[in-house]
Image (cartoon, rainbow, N blue to C red; front, side, top):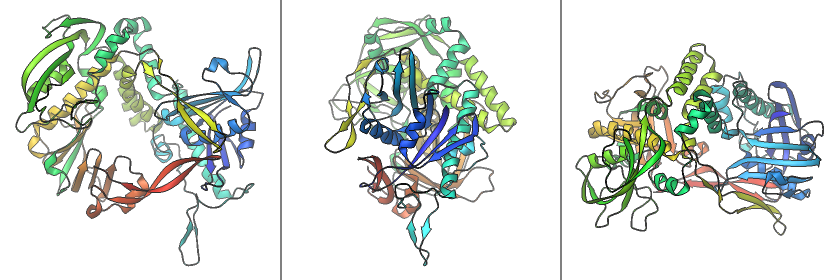
Length: 581
């Protein structure tokens, strides 16, 4: 069976267990199975008639209950799936605790294996079930568990924390809640699978599609396997998105502004800007222009100071000096750090800083092309536009995902460390231990470095053009004071790489990176203004307690749920969320 599944679990530390499960077959949503015991669920999984694959939306939670069941039922964990035998299982869990898969072998006889594989659908569709229901036009809505109130109208329980005894007979509302969750996911994944998107992650789907688009032989010529020592040097030039709050607006209430987002930032730079390819050439000292190898990564050392009225753009991570990993530096002080910059970042750096005691050490240079991603992006932009016109939400969303998921694969690290589950007999719960570092094939880090460099270049140079009213930037967005459309930006709601006016706000407050609130609405919208709260790490349940007056560094709010592994699986413990500096 190929299906989506979900567990409903108790919330008590002394009684942590699955009280309900739901299964919906992908491609046949009328086939819905439910029950109230994990033993029954695992018996279905062990059906000797067929191997099965189940997708859980957030396997990191539901998977804890599966792992506990396996260990308590004498299944042995093996690190290599080639070692799967009777009553064994293997896992793919990252060093950060990201669950990718659990593969269980119930029986193996010769070449015939009776097994079940559990995948995380969040690695394909990284949105809430409610958002997926809307984006994919499933015709269903995410339901809420029915709450109970006393005769005075006071909440007794919220439906999720209700005490349900072992053997609890599911109510009609509980069954409908279960069914909607798994059917929404089954319908959305079916849309993906019908289009051939059946890899473990959406990034892998995008890479597979790209290889098919340009031909595998050309792919190998464009992106050769680099030696690990060269990959390591070039990888130092790879950096993420630009996220920065202008200090003069920090903590202040802004009375009116605009928010602009780039239309498909990463696809736009992949489409329009020069990208490296082929085997890099090493050079000593300063790069000298080479028309055959026009792009480069330069290693240098210097001191620097930010020019007046310019936006800082340099971060130095893992430094033994005084620099913070997340700080955009205005001044290097009396220390001369070693910088490894793409040619795009180097030009931006020299435009924004006065530089002293500059010494060029060495680097690598590359051939370049502006066409290697055009065919792929043209295809998916056409898919996006045509399906949007046809009001096919599902295929429109797939096109968006394929446009935005390719670039990250090029930066995959050649080293990986996995976590492995271990059953703690004394405490009767599952804990996780780090395995040894392992090597794997990298793709081609120069492309990852230049895609993100061109994206930062776009955002930072655009912000610099409107410096006098620039509040905040986050990767592909600009937040500006005032209501005038800036003349310095290419503003268009559809054009690839142009800035689209996403929000008009009458009130705003910004505390730090990824922590701000704005009261506004979309342009040309008839909707009333509402608060949009963005705060890294803050659960949406906290939002009801957030107000303009109490939105500050150090503020605490109710509503955060934190995982705690206990005998049986995992519970969510309520904690206060604190906005930290």
